[in-house]
Length: 252
Image (cartoon, rainbow, N blue to C red; front, side, top):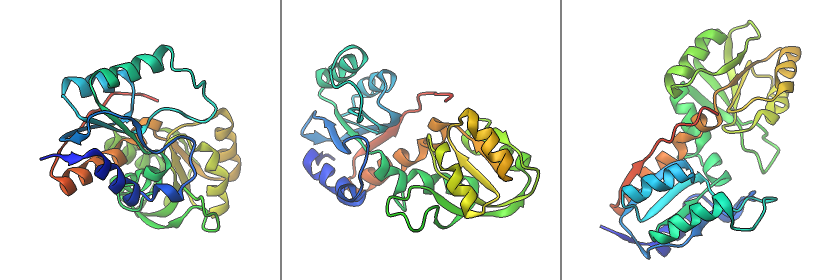
């Protein structure tokens, strides 16, 4: 089975509501390859290691969360960027990248997929009055101490989180995958017991400690590996094509 590339891209754009979301990079087809797609390899970031894996697996398309051509970056195709794009073009591999549309999708999105793995029930958006809201709020199935919740996170993501423990049981939680430590202020305003994201800054410790909220930095890569897998599986089921997720270990 195969699908025409243009049809697949069109369906992805509609499914992820790409046109409605303002982002820091182009979402969709970033590098053009074969016109027919039979095998997709997915991964978090379009690194050289993932590209090499896609080549070895004879993929027709590479589906990622972190692609190329970010706002503010040097537009020259030299060095690392040149080597990556050259490898894709040489093997006629399409690069499909979806950033914020994949974070916020209500079914395959990174935030929803993370919630499913941590036993969190979504109760609403982190910023209900912000049309560009990304984060979510919800509840744990049972109240946990910070150490108990950290153990659950580590078991689900295979990575121990950095923890700021406020010392109280956690029931109400806010979260936003990736590098969203800047949303801690919104989590505090939402009155939750804990906030989860991927990364941490030096100021985050003080902000959490002084505002009485537990904080978990569970890894940018680790918190965002599940949305792209779910999206790849959706494509495989929809079009009857092959999909394989490749994990390129990243401790950050």
